[in-house]
Length: 273
Image (tube, rainbow, N blue to C red):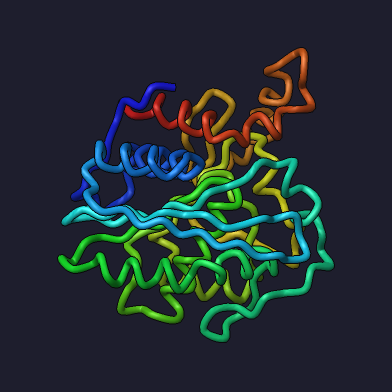
């Protein structure tokens, strides 16, 4: 789709335009470095740092990639995601050993913990270096990138609060931590996080509960592209059913189709007015 909106570098609170801009930043994380730098400049960010680390965990993850873009008013770190087929097996494995939670609080999914740990020193240092004018700081990502963005926000909040991020926006993120860490996160950071779930997107439903859970605040996108601050109690099941039957030729693929970052961008764009 055509990029039609940019960043409001003075944004400090939740808004659909801000969510749309950060979804675009999440989409950009899938691109090559030169494309990232060109688009970041078009959005008004004059400095970009790339973060990449290769490692060999007991999961089919090859590397972690992210970028940090900075202007004189705003800093955005966007983590790259991956496709559902690539993360299906290890996301669904409830026997995965836990990774110690941040600030000695609870635990996180091992794969996510190792992935974030591989780039965290570089990300933290970039934010600390670039935040030279009191800029707001935002973490964002789609899919796996959303889980890493949420954990980056948690890690900064629990371990280095002087660098406290102003917000975390995620799109189709999987569950990333246990209830203990989620509760601690929600108490002090819940009103800064917005977790978008598009209708029947399958990825937010894994890894399985109760071992792993989500943090607040949910923004549910229904089958018609409307945004809600919760799944409607009376109409939620019917809405999900409509989503499942939206494509008569491939109804079973709805959970994967709804996960696409393009679907999130399309829905958010509909709500810009």
